[in-house]
Length: 399
Image (tube, rainbow, N blue to C red):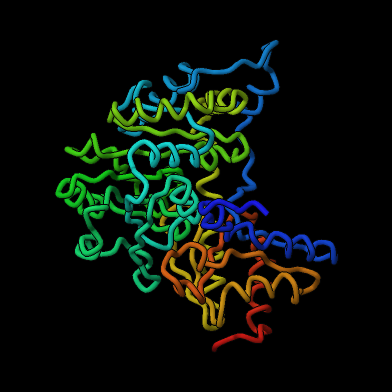
């Protein structure tokens, strides 16, 4: 029998999606499943974006420019300029989701065997993008005890070798909800300058910063403009994950030119998604105000409910709409499967994402889960009640 490739064998399964069969079986049993495992908001997509697709007059859906429609890139540049990111439309590529932006960035700057340092826990698909590009991920652990703050720069420096070519951050962070401060990014800047590294900054959750905190972009760092590659997406900003439109943004023309060749190889980003995304740029501030207030309310409710549970600790996230929670369980992977396959509370159960899949260090995150507060408050209340009942009943409870 022909063999599967090494990359095919190395490619990790998604910790967010691997429990789907158990959730489907729970639903077949008649159980209501509350999906806290995936960042799929229930917030309506802006009407202006939906109308743009509904009212299309095109008779032929043509290829777009490989870098994305120029009108959209110019509109996106204007959006970035509005948040003090000085770029023009030639300094970005529109991609098939933020995922392709990260892949293009890796393929354009890193050779097989090169290393990137990533604070863990990190977005699990970074592992997949790294495997695709032949890149080695070197994790540096942030801890729940510090609410997942950036590890000390001295700890980063210990990991740097001749193979180290970059540092990857997600700000605000998925899966922890931590928001890196300007001071933390300035510390990273000293390292980027000292070793002439790339800084890959995933800023998909820019709009979701809470409690008076503001987002400081890696693009704001002075003196390392040629080192910074910003990665972005419309998926969360406008609650339209399915349009699959992202962006890779950098002042480094060599990176843009290299990535453009990969972009040409895949022809173009999605046309319908670009039309919706361009229209979404006209979304009014009232939309974001409403979304912001909704997430604040959900976050506060959920964090309070979790921290009331015996043996549970939940940091208060400063951004995004996730948090990593410490549970009194022996193994979060076992617990996440058990709660779907062997437990229900009033015909209800909960799907969470085991945090082990967001760590690269073996054994890390064993008693942690990622929870996304993307459900309405009534559903969140039922989910929290169900989770608490499950923790009391779980045979592998440690407290």
